[in-house]
Length: 274
Image (tube, rainbow, N blue to C red):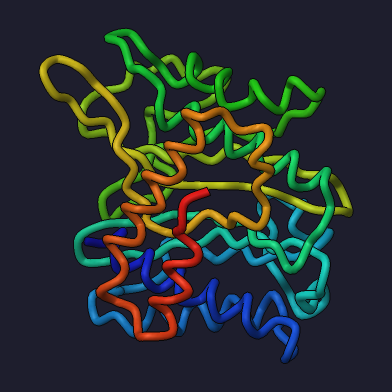
């Protein structure tokens, strides 16, 4: 339920943002505050699970960015916006990142975003074997960026506690983590790419290690649309398109009950098949 409640709050915020950034002044700080207001509407929400990372343009390229009065940028047409945030609910912890197009038309940005997405899907779909550790999965997350000579300088995923720490070991998806994945572990799936003083991209869902008939696999927990305006469909495989459509159908079915009439239309659009 934590992911359903949190996904609804984040999704409402992203719809509001896309509709209003060109009409009124929205800054990294005022945007972050607005997202907090959306989360606070839920009685089961306790507090943020970590300080929100809300960065646009060059600031989105700073991996652990925290907007201050000095650095605070206004969201501007043509840029991209990265928001990494989460909440503590009575029954769980969330951590989710979405990168949003503010009418960005750069083919290069779309190409990179789509390669980050391909890495995200490769992690979500990874076939876990008995000895699988995070270091094996990490290589798959970077694979499509490396095809064009790019990489990112953080791990692909960290363990997440249950109404506890957002960064909680011992497991992780990183180059050096050798801890075997066990049933019940929650871990983040967050490949990205950052170009200094230009832009940053990250797509993060939390995933859960499930086991059925002796077979372990990842189940997605996070429920929020991935911005289709940044996807270059031409470099996605049939299987990847199918994954995105299935994920978005789940998001729509899970969140539609929390939306008003206008938001339902936005949700339909955001989750329609590619």
